[in-house]
Image (cartoon, rainbow, N blue to C red; front, side, top):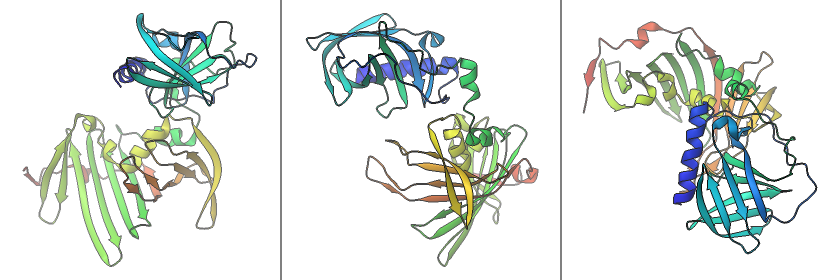
Length: 339
């Protein structure tokens, strides 16, 4: 998979440069020329897509082309570097090309190709034959893309100010274990505290996690001990990235690939933004009350590629605000235990 992996890495490099790796856009239209059932021909890339977002490829400083010859061979050019397509085939609306022994699939429609770099539809290059009308595609400027979609999920994520301080209070229920865990989270910059109390049947327990300067600890308040767990630069500036609810919001805030529906909890109807299951992640729904505040987050059951079964998780949101307890963000009185 060297060819596909290298291409995907280059694509993500473009995204990083543009600051749009997790930024989507509105729905995408298909090519508008008359139906063309013969994929053979010369194609030029005109757009890159990530998580449902599309922008002109020229905005990302890239160029690419594909030539599919009638004899089943062709060429692939990316940023001036040419590779041979040793074989290609067209089945069920998809063109599968083989380059350097690796395969990559592209959806074909009316003179356009959508080359799937990630294998799950999250990262695509869009190509068109000469003369194909691509004006129906919703190409966004980088500024529009960086702002993200006009979704309630994006708005909820943006409302959390990690620098000023954030407080999250929520409960997670697991049907499979008949368990409930209440989280009380306080975070400011790279400092993070998450207290939790759990109940599963007759069993009950409490615990706390703390992070600062990229180091994470398990706290034992009764012994005033902070036991070192791990260290990561990813949480140095934003400790809240350790939190499960925040992670869910962050992961889907820039994703425009959702449907709107009604979800009912405790006899009350909520507006939900529902993201479909993918190859690597379960489906998930973010439900909002009449006041626009996030009320529930629910994941669907999911089986991973390795066969691990992930249960349904239901988050009940009690509050998301900026009222933090500064005393919880200081463990200077604790004994640090490093093993």
